[in-house]
Length: 625
Ligand code: BGC
Image (cartoon, rainbow, N blue to C red):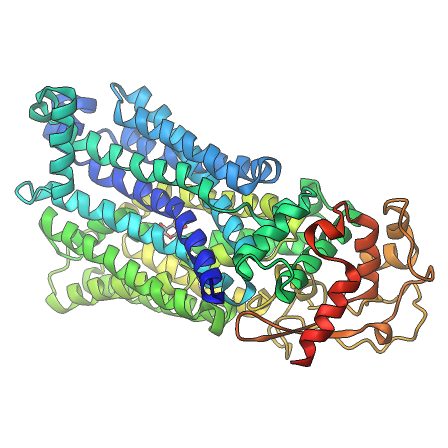
């Protein structure tokens, strides 16, 4: 195996986990088409609904909204489960919850069953929507972490587009989707009757059933992929962790310097976090994590207040408002919309790690703001005083359709993937799953608000809907510019520095990533220093723990520093390690952390082939080539 094979492993693992994104996209998208199917209307709403071509709005609203409610709850449960049962087994658990929900949806015989089953499926999707990016972020090397997490967003867009196209095909009865046809035939073959086919409740049951296949694939397939090495180490399963790190970084070579360096980085972070007992949800609401929680929660709320789902859920209505009269024409335009969404996510996959999170979010907010304002503006210009009347100016219709696509593209390359990336990156290991679960729940909460409010807005203030979302995009542009530090290309273990050494307003700092400052301090620390002896930024409270000895006191009794004193930067050996990702990794290996490591390591160093001495030696050796 070559190094390429290792990176193939990483890509494969993260791409496979992204199937959860497909479930997310498909299940949230498929219902809008199902709600318009004649057989569905007749089955759940009787002939009245069939004649009106719609269910009562309260019922259809509940059918759409309850899934999102389930997602909200699932996102909150996903965090503790991910910490407790592992990211990997929690993915399995919530996949099965999703599958149960999908089976019950498919088999629904009355509204109550449909609602309950959609809630259950939602719990699965919501939890997966936070567990998967967390898992991906902990598997990924820092250089391509953004790219790998973007894969989940890409699969979301693919799931949405597939559901759009299945809906479109359903409208065009003659163009029966080949897959649907074959599964229908298989159904007849297995069940031995075609009553359902001729009664055609299968026309809505099939699209709901199809999602079980990717669900099962993920539930079984994930067993072939590794645990998160960071979760393993957080549970003192270092031997397994080092094997996983070796598998995904160095083709199974546990003594590879890159593997060993990452092992030590994680170990150090865990030791520090344990010393500080950063564990409970409450910590997220306190200094210093509060700032990250606020940034994460707002990034997810902002994502929804771009107005993306006003377009995703109500695109057919928008296109109709723009004058695409027939159902079929507006659904076709919606299908194209889905393709734009998929294609425009590709640049993010390619460049999010090069361009950085800030630039992408700021430029994305700019593009989405302009497009929303133009769409709103054109409707104002054309129908001012005649609100609700379809446009008759041909050019204006095209402007609206084109700028809806530009809007979707602007979202797809920026806020779509980057919010998921950013939220998994900003929390320390011990709080990553919990923090991401809250930020993800905010996404679903905001999604729910948008999906309830948009139909009312579109009815009452028409173009004002787009002007409102356009203005929100302007606000988020400014917010990212001012407050969001850059996280690209940082080890997850180094993210603390980004936040702890950068002030709240990052816009005018030279280094928006909060670079480590060289330590100008004397040998002996006093309680006012904010920079720790290892040269890394710490908060004053963290720092005082180290300087007044409480952190050391809380370490296991076997702990002893070499001379009983914390070290200062000048003592630190500088280690340069040849990275496996064609970059040289240069970092400071703090003496303190080696001490802490020695104190807290529960694994026999020899059993994993690592000793602190051998590490330093290896690192020094590798620095020579
Ligand atoms: C959002 C969804 C949205 C989708 C569109 C996701 O990142 O969270 O609400 O429907 O992108 O592609």
